[in-house]
Length: 189
Image (cartoon, rainbow, N blue to C red; front, side):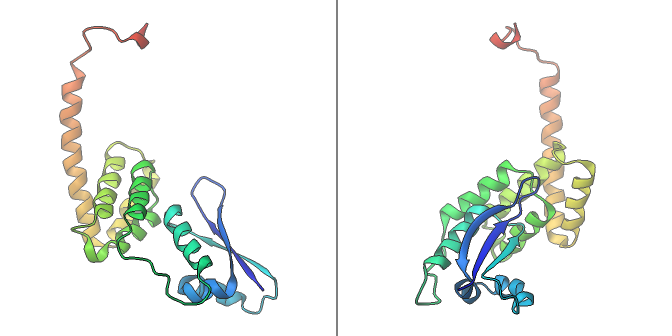
């Protein structure tokens, strides 16, 4: 029986092993992984490795564990609302300067419910925040903007948020520029 090791590529870090799953089970439940393994159909090895990009680790681990645990049916019994997965994705977006590919994956996944999706709103806010506060290098910022331009509505929404946050940042900077604390804080000594 052949096993597929599923790794997640995280920018700036070594690939993270998510799980090892029987090949026939993962092929039955994941069309994407089945397509990725197709060129290796004639490979007789008992262990194959696949690397995934642009995904939230917690969400992938959840789905892979559901697949690994299913022995009899193809139905994974994943209920539509998954607030804990949504929370993991939002947390990841909020605490990491995401890549253009990650931005694209989240935007496409939120396509049908953009207006009501907390994930999409968080994505827009964080990308704009990171652009305004220069959390990206010039090359990274250009790559983000170029990727967003592939979808005009995404580009417009990010640009609108950037303008809003630049105005807020300018007001904040103007307020804090002339005001020094009256008493020194304990760490200033």
